[in-house]
Length: 248
Image (cartoon, rainbow, N blue to C red; front, side):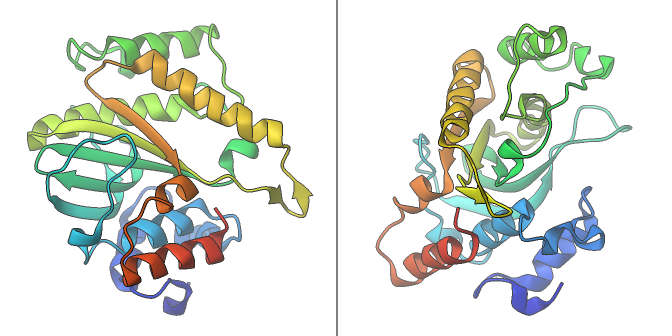
């Protein structure tokens, strides 16, 4: 992975160090250099703000007007136990009031098979009284009473459990923010428009199912978010560079 592969203004060495310590081994495996890399989109988009906290634009659906205290990539939200695997999110935004975990998707909704793997560890009574909707989603996914073709709902449930624990440690309110690209083709083949619409429908279904729990769930496409960015020259240039490089 060459330093020059990052967009202008992205702190490449910091990003590479974060990727090296994360659980996905994105660089070593070669996945980060893939034309379909989701991680490359996420770290280039959010990584630019690591050293420009004051420029971070509001996320859609968020009414948090507090100053941004931290932006980083490859963030682990640890469960309330030491062993086992803990969820890694693509980015994190911390304000005075919220801890916002970012889960980013690019081609995955239209490529990967969605499996249901939720061990008995997730049944431990440690999530608190206001996580019942996520717990119900966990149980419905296990039983097969709810199925998603494009949305990795199992991953989102795990992320929510990690975030609720991490946010309590930090004295913040937890938010899980799902941001996604909507590519029109993959490997030279068109992605059916009905698949793109169905993905959005599944996101909305998930959002309705968990609405009201301690971990707030919000979502946006990359293009929808970038279209709201303030008219600042450097910020607009970064938005254009994301669109041109990744066509999200």
